[in-house]
Length: 137
Image 1 (cartoon, one colour):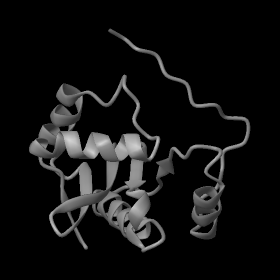
Image 2 (cartoon, rainbow, N blue to C red):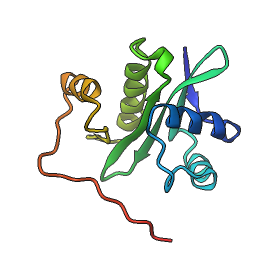
Image 3 (cartoon, rainbow, N blue to C red):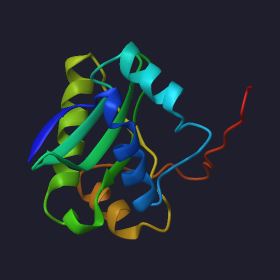
């Protein structure tokens, strides 16, 4: 397995992965916005590749004030093979290299295995917080 930056030509494959893992979020996951994110920061989307097939991805948002790992997805056929952990470690390392001192993640609340796995790695849930969004245009 190899981790490397996303290429805009891989948009359809990455979006299919997000759909297959129930992480696709139409308001954010549009070709123009995803490719603009990648153009603005080529390391902000990482893909895991096996035999030229994308089997995982993570979207990284870095800001000196706050950092987020978003859309960490692994093809269901490759789950529990360490790909998610590799994506998480890669993302955390990149954030640290950029001066980040903390990170947040969005995890579907019903994904108990991932929530528990992140807790074992030192992640904590934020009590009484609900994630909300608004489309601006």
